[in-house]
Image (cartoon, rainbow, N blue to C red):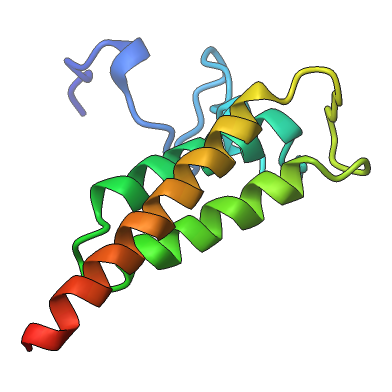
Length: 118
């Protein structure tokens, strides 16, 4: 057999051919599905969904659905049993709720203006 020309640090982790010199690969910390979602992550999701609801208000109800989802995730982040809940710092969640309400309002105005012309 010939020796491999691939450097050891670039070789794959083939379980059939373990190399005792290389450490086993572990998944990154953010990939931990057992870890509960924190309050900050809920608030960030609410802000993103609220912004998407504003951007998609013209898509016949999609902005309204995204706005409702943003309000739901912001309220989930405000629950006291959510990990990392800090009642003094909830500005991102409030901004997420405000953007969601704006997206819902824009979507309703658009639907009331566009539906009679269809």
